[in-house]
Structure formats: C-alpha cells, structure tokens
Length: 219
Length: 228
Image (tube, rainbow over all chains, first blue to last red; front, side, top):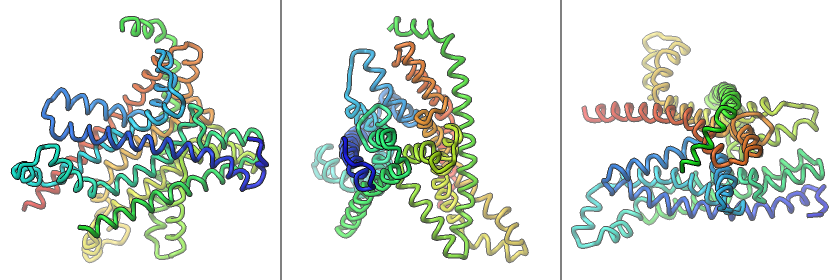
C-alpha cells in the first residue's frame, strides 16, 4: 500500500480496494438476510406452534435491540474463545446477515400478511402443493410489496459494513484509518471515504428503483 | 455449561461497577445525542415547511447527504478530522454531535411525515373558528401528529442508543469500549459481550415494546374509524 496517497485520486484508489471488501460483505450479508429472513417469516406465518413462535420472536428481539457492533464482537472475539475462529470478513458477513435476517423477517412477514388469504386458498384448491403456492403465487406478490423496504435495507447495509472495520475487516473505513495515521491527510481522506460510499449507494438505489418500475409495469 | 456461569460468579463483582459507570455514559451520550437530533430535526422541519425555497433546498440537501454517509465515517471525521482545522472535541462530544447530526435527518423525516399526515382541513377549521396560526398548530395539529409520531420517535431513540456503541471507536468510555477493555484483560470475551448485549437489551427492548404497543393501539383506532 505504498502509493502516492497524498492526492485525492491516490486516496480514492487505496480506499477503493476497501470498497471491494465492503461490497463482498454487503452482498454476503444481504444474501444471508434474504434467505434466513424469508425462512423465518414463513415460519412465523404458517407454523402455528407457540414454542417456535416464541423462539423466533426471541431471536428477532435480541438481534434488533442489541447493537450490531456487539454481535460482531461476539462472533469474532467471543466464539474465538470457544475455538471457533472466523476471518474478520466472514464474521462481518454472518453478524450483519443475522441482524438483517431479523429485519427482513419482519418485512417479509408483513408482506405475506398483506396478501389476501384467498390467494393461497385458491392456489391450494386448484391443486398446487403448499410449496408451489408459495413459489408461484405468494412469493411474487410478496416481493413486489416488499421491494421498497428491501432497497432501503440494502442501502443501510452498505453503510453498516463500515462497522466491520472494528474487527479489522479491510473495508473502506479500515483503510481510511490506516491512511490517516500514515499520511495525516485527515480531512481529504474522510471526504474521499464519504464520496466512495455515495458512489456505492447510487447504483443500489438506481437498481431498486428500476426493478420497482419494471415490476409495476408488468402488473 | 455450569462452568460458564461460574465464571460470571467469579467476575461479576469486578465487572458490574465498571459496566454500570459505562452504562451511565451510554445513557448520557444517547440522551444528549437524541436531544440534539430532536432540536435539529425540528429546525429542519421548519425549514422544509418554509416558504423560502433556499431553506427547503438546504434542509433537503442536509437530510440526503447525512443519509449517504455511514455514521462511523461521520464520527471519525468529527473526532479526527476537526482537530487539524483547529476544533478539538472530546470523544464524548464528538459522539454527541455525530449522533445528533445523524439522528436529525431521521427525526426530520418522522416529523415531516407525522405533521404531513394531518388533514389540512383540521388547521383550516381551527383558523376559521378564530385560533391564531400558532394556537392552531399547538392545540390542533401537534396533538394529533404527536400520537402518530411517538412510535417512530421511540424507534429512532432505540436506533440512536444502539448507534452510540460506535462511539467506542472514538475513545468514549461507554459500554462497548469498557467491554472491550474488560475482555482484553479477562480473556472472557464471550461472557462480557453477552453481558453487555444484555445491558443494551434491557434498555432498548422495553422501549421497542412500548413503541409497538402504541402502534397497535393506533391501528385499532384507525380500523374502527374505517368501520363506522
């Protein structure tokens, strides 16, 4: 990392390698949150067991009322003391993904609840299996309803990847802090970091806006 | 498992006073931060609703730019970026300022949404029966909007409380930094981070529950109104 990091572009180039990690962490956590959140939402919606409902609720409340930083420290430092060692990047993906699953579970559960019960009953009565009904009838409608929330979550998630610098994952803020201690171009470096986050967020909000517009037009 | 809890028994006497002190710092940090966020949020809302487009534009730009910057970047910039410009803030005050600026954008959105959802006929009716604009706002618009805004404002405080944990990275002796310090001297990271998680949970969970309860009560009111 011995670049000529005194120029704005030089700084941006160093931070950009952190942006790649941030996007990796963001994509991994988003995928995990999507899958786990969906499974949890289906569980709370269709499984009528009180014990399971309580367990899911406890998971969600713990994830939502404790700072993400605490989850990352638990995964990275806490589990290491039990002999379970994650790389900083993996710990960040799992931690942010687990928090995100709680957020998206609420989103998906609300989405499922918003669909008229007759949709599922009709699908079952024409002979679809429950899984087919979910895949071909409920899921498309739910995704369309929840797309704005998914977009917001994705943007928030990209910003939250900055927390991973606390467990030394080499993302944008990690490189920014390193650069500050080696070059003292403090103001310039933080401005560059903020510009970089804006550059990462723009395509995401553009993508979700496009997707929403497209789904709206096929309606 | 027993051994796991025995470690708590051995260390709790040493840890609890330090964590309680740290919890006080976290409480102060989040309280001052939220007070600042609320104040700035009100100013932003007044700007957004003003007749001058320059003010509206400035408020919009502020909200947008705060929403694209990660809080951690803002905190680090305030703590490390201001001293070269001649302004030095302690970690606590840089944290308060950062949490306040960041929270203001969210509070402003909540206030805008809450006030905007009150039908303008309410205000017009109040003015028509002779209330001054200020009276109409204070006695007619605000009380109704307040009902709508309470749950999201509580959620915003919970979010800010959790965000205050990031101040550990700018040398503020709040819960998270204290937990880090204890974990590096006791080598019991799992114990200490679970415990500190419980500290946050103990404050945040009741508030989240109250927020959800209020939300549900309001939803109930809405449904009966739709039915009649």
